[in-house]
Length: 139
Ligand SMILES: [Zn+2]
Image (cartoon, rainbow, N blue to C red; front, side, top):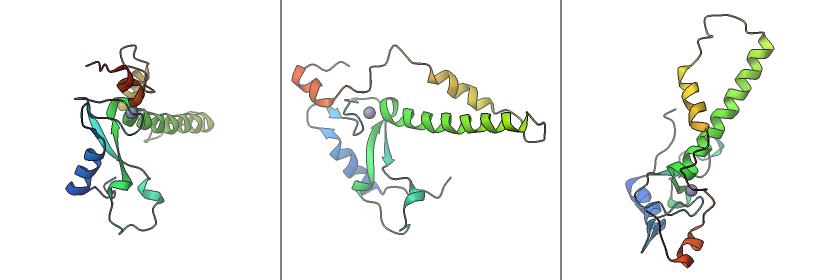
């Protein structure tokens, strides 16, 4: 969907600056995790579909910087799961009716695999404050 409004460079920079700790660098505004060099994504706080004023300019308040691994991805995953769940229910209801539209998306299995919990990644609840009090940053 290309209808989403994007942040201007200025606003994007404001959001990144807001999420920038002077010592530790960029942290996730969703959970407070220090991201360091990990990928992040500037996300819209509200879904665009819920906004009434489409013409209004986006400001830094409309966005949040999220770590891709800790906050941005999981949110996307949930959406996918919910949609898949609904599709499965629908399929069951229709009794696996065969038609031109029943080609299974190969992309879905990829997502399922990714969903498996990784023992490598840190729990996403680790807050920025708790890291600073300990004074040690891993990575
Ligand atoms: Zn996060």
